[in-house]
Image (tube, rainbow, N blue to C red):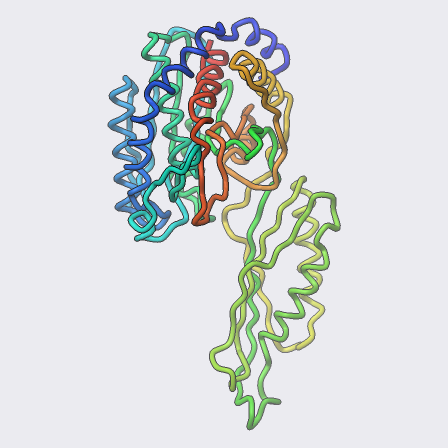
Length: 399
């Protein structure tokens, strides 16, 4: 979306009565929303648990068909199924709503930590990352349908089952369904302060492997080549580049090695997370890492750097992203609150669709936080206004 398109879209901003009606509709149906949320969060849907993911995809399929969408289950033999739906209207704009149905929690957590409400806070595994956000988008569409509003070209809705891991099967699907879209709205949670997201750092994961030689640590340690010792040396070298380029961060997050305390370890590995503002910074850092691997403490230990497959380029705040953010700010003003658009170091599928060349906004779910923890939460009073903000964006860009 260009600035010229923004001017055109601004003239087609939904009437205040439309977005306030969406807010009122969702608020009136909040008890049903919470009932659905409780049901969805009671289903274990970790990325590697296909039965639970398939159950949620099927639920979304049924729910979308009830709204009049052309719904499809994208079946995956080895992974959870994905959900895709499309709805056609009388306008010209094409929009993609992009979410995910997988969580990070192992089987059993859903039963152990059912959804609970304390005051204005809803707690539960997946309430904000992102079952509640996906549900909020369904309610935004439902509210528009209840008013017989169809002044959009096409609303596409994709929920993938592999967002939380680096081995992605859905990247090509995301690229395909985003083709021709005038705006893409990613359904991650709004920031804790209510901000939406217009830019994200890029992210890459790496595994550095060290292959040494084992020996008895007491009898003949000199015959061994200690893989852990060499790996520790490399971790310090790699980490020395933290911050060498503006916005670049390096974190060694997982390390393992050895078999017994009395054995010189013949193998060890460490996993790194890198975040960056510019892709060239990642490339240059990788070059320096490979040079560092030639500077060894234990010469006979062999080193191998493996780049994980899920590399996400930065989501840059383009002119199109900025135009969408300005529309969102105008709609929020009509609803009686303000939003800022922010930059964050986290990655999401917004990184992908942005790299495909599309205007995108992220953080369009309700307000919440503490994802991936026992304290994951959603602010209940944010559900209706945030659904109205999303519905207003569908109306504005769709027109």
